[in-house]
Image (cartoon, rainbow, N blue to C red; front, side, top):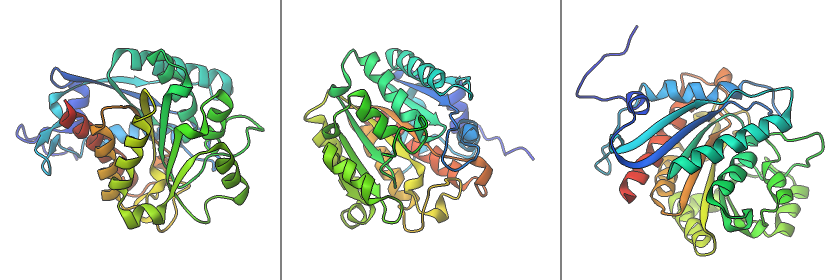
Length: 305
């Protein structure tokens, strides 16, 4: 059954397809990477987020913004070679570089979290600055510091970026959960100088507040900021489509507020939405949360224009 068509209720999917108005410049790129520790179908994530946008309007009633004011371009999905991790990373890096060169802001629809490493490298190249000049904020239940033995996976993009030359002092990780990490990898984070805020600490102080403080801290030292928004930071009940989600994570409204704060910040130029596996999702629960985070980011961007 087709959804009701109402000219007075514009859909976010139509905005993404049509391009919006001539304010700002937002590029959207699908990266169907699927190299997860838990076998699944994260490569179907980009299409699932787009499909969820059909159920969303373009009007931010809370703040009075319409994201149709933002000029958006859907750059489609990359074609990746699953048998060659190095080629996949090179293709992701090049595509993000081109997207970042052409747009003020770029949102990447994932795909698993392994895409963050090549995407951030591509963003830095587009900016013409070394990795050491880029700040990274992760909203994630996990440290993502597993060893690189065996190649890149969704559990080691931060370890890979450290190897690539991104200093640990450039990284803030928010939402880390107990019983989702190990003491060994926590020690790696501490030795590298990575700043961390656990899920409990962020919840007690308010996630949006903690995110704003972290962004301001990074902005004081770095040219631009990349945000990695891993959907598994949400509570398992609201993220059944994330293999790594746990009971006790953030609620969708907290993640949405955080996404708006990121979009509104002048130094946040890139965001990825990762770890959606539609094959385990229930009633588009996780896909809708991802779509809403994307729209909140776009509304935050609109507020800053």
